[in-house]
Image (cartoon, rainbow, N blue to C red; front, side, top):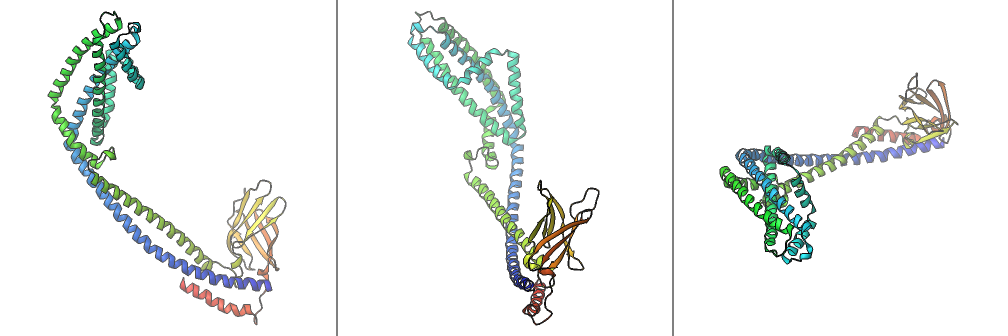
Length: 442
């Protein structure tokens, strides 16, 4: 009797506490919902500004593409054709200098030759792939070389559908042109230095290189004249001018390298907008998470205080979801009050769901339904009856029908409260008032 009175008193006090908690959570949720609405509106506004900005940029890029893509593509092709020739010139010079380095007569101790061999040796050591490329150029016949160059051109043509990519390809080509021309200037200088070799020495490797240099320069002059004629026919000056007009405009919208932007102010504005959008989204998601948590907490408290049957005197409230188990040898059974029940196989810890609490029975037993389905049988279920005792224990579990279990628990729940003349009964009137108040508030 006393244990039941204690449970009822605990339930009454816990209901007051939970009711106050619910009111506090509802106030928090109302405030968070306002913050959520403000954050959502702010995020949506910034995202719309960003979409408008992107639409503006897309329209601007379309206009730029219409005006500049064709001349920029043509300029890229002219640079590509020139690069094929200049790469071949560089490969030829490397091949000649490599032949001198590998074949000259060291015993002649020719200062001019020694100086060139030393300087070229440092160059080749720093850039070993250059000699590999030059050898590959020598090893391929004209047909293979032509196919390789066409393949390179086809790869580049994939960029020609996009002004952004084409501008980037031109930027790369111009940088390579400068590099190749610088290489040729250095290599050609070393070759010309060989012309000062001591002609009293019959160094065949050096003499062969000097003769080959004369042939190279004749061929180079002719080929560069052809390049100039081609450039003049294509009006390359106008093409380059169009590219130089397009590049800063394209970079301002879709920079390939943000550090190379010409419009730092516009880039700062874009970066600031992106940061504002990212910050607004982060704030919105944080508030959304808080709102979701509070919504769940309020819902759970409402369900517990308003919808759950916790016994006529809230005697189950303080023990809600507390679990009790019984080891029967092969299995351990677990019953969690007003929550769930399970059967656990002791040898492998495998769990079978025996159902979740659905309702009180006619004699105030607990009904757990909708458990795991039996093989060729019904869904598992368990009914828990109570015997009056001061201690809560699970004392018996049987299976009278296949996968339909019956259990017995002892506890104060089955005991009777005094009809009158008790603090508990007096408290019940107050408790009913509290319940009704919570119900009205909810």
